[in-house]
Image 1 (cartoon, helix red, strand yellow):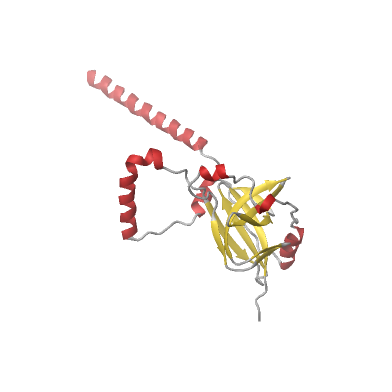
Image 2: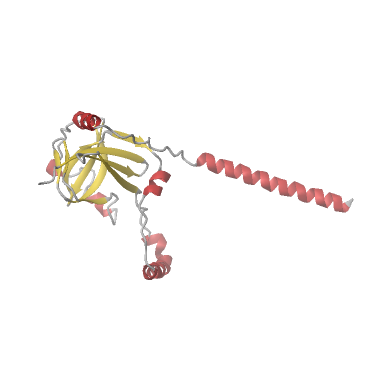
Length: 217
C-alpha cells in the first residue's frame, strides 16, 4: 500500500506542474500583442498610381527656422544617439511640391491637424514634410523581423564580446535606451515613374508615394 500511495502522490505532483505550465504558457500568449500583417500589395495600374499621387495633400505647415519644435536642447541632452533612422536617397524624389535631392536624411513620423506625414531632415533642418497616403498598425514583432540584421566577421564578433565583458560592471550606468526598430522597403511602378516607400517604425507602417525624375537621355 505504501508504494501505491507514493506512486499516486508522484502522479498528482507531475500533473499539477503540467497544468501550471500550460496555464502560464496560455497567459504568456494572451499578453503578447497581436501581429497584424500589412495588406498584400496588389499591382497598381498607371492610372491608380497617378490618382493616389494627385490626391496627396499639399501640406501648408511651417515651422520656425525649419526646425522640429519637439527637438529642443533639453531633448538632445537626454540622448546619446538619434532615435530616428538615417537613410540615403540615390534618386531625386518628388512629392507634390516637395523635392528631395540625392543625399542622407533622418526620417521622423509625425501628425498635425489629423494629417499624417514623415519629416525628412538634414543637419537638424526640415527639408520636406512628405504626406502619408496610408498608415497601418502592424506590431513591433513584425517590424523587428523586417529590420536588416548586421553581419559581423569573426574578428568583429570577438571584439564585441571583449567590449561586452569590459562594459558589464558599468551596464546599469552606461546602458542606453534601446533603438527604435525600423525597416524600409521600396517598390516601383512598371514604367519606373513612381516609387512607393514603406516605412516601418516602432509598430506602425507608413506608406509614401514619390514621383521620380525622368533620366536625362
